[in-house]
Amino acid sequence: MSASAAAGAGPTASGAGPRLSLIIPTLDSHPLLPRLVTSLRRQSWPHWQVLFIDGPSGLEHRAWLDALCHRDKRFTWQPQDPAFPGIFGAMNQGFRAAPADHWLLFWGSDDWAPGPTVLEEALKATRPDSPGGDPPDLVVCSGRYAGAGQDGAIQLGRRTAFSSCRAYRLSLFLGSTPPHQATLIGPGARRRTDQFAEPFRLSADLDYFLRLSGCADLSARGLDLELVHMGEAGVSGQQTRRRLQEVRLAYGRAFGWLWWIPFSLRYGRRLWSRLPSLGRERKATGRGG
Image (cartoon, rainbow, N blue to C red; front, side, top):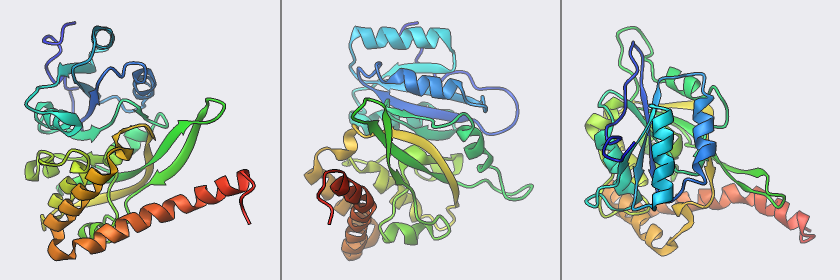
């Protein structure tokens, strides 16, 4: 299957109920993708589809995508449009390509579903509270970072979660942020804000959630579910100086001169979340006392 043949957003399952599009930017990352693909094929809930937005990858990677999409029509791919550069540009391309009534989930090549029922559990939370009611605009779950241990086996690391969806904007002001890989973005949220903004290259997800928080009628629902395991080698740990500048800009746009409060609390939370693992490392190396 050529890129042009796969350029559609893929078939939509028939019948009632929510539908989910997973948008996955790629760049020569096919060695990482089998774990993600396998975790999706094992899901008990079948009404998902995947759209890979592929940067200027080599022939081997694109041949791998072609073969996958030929075998399983739930997977499609598009070449990344140069008008949408970077990882959030690829995600914006996915915003536009996914059917308007679909829920969206943005994963990376090194992310995967930790269990076979997580999508089913997450999509149950997209239903209205009462017959005839409106569904939530966001469903916020949790995720967990994972990396290779010394023996090469997967080792789970710190958990990332949002503090409270009942006080969505206040939680953002207090430095908590929904992990975008664990947040289902519904049609209602997409109608309000349908793209990640320039000039953000590293923190466009924070800015997106902050802009949504300015909508007085936004409905966010929290779910105590570990939806995704996330590889630790992504862009999140890169270009620290630019990331800090972007985080400050995002908070400044949302909260004006009070930007320093959520900024300080955000990184205070990050430091606190790492303290238990730091303690274990000191004991393991004999530096504890």
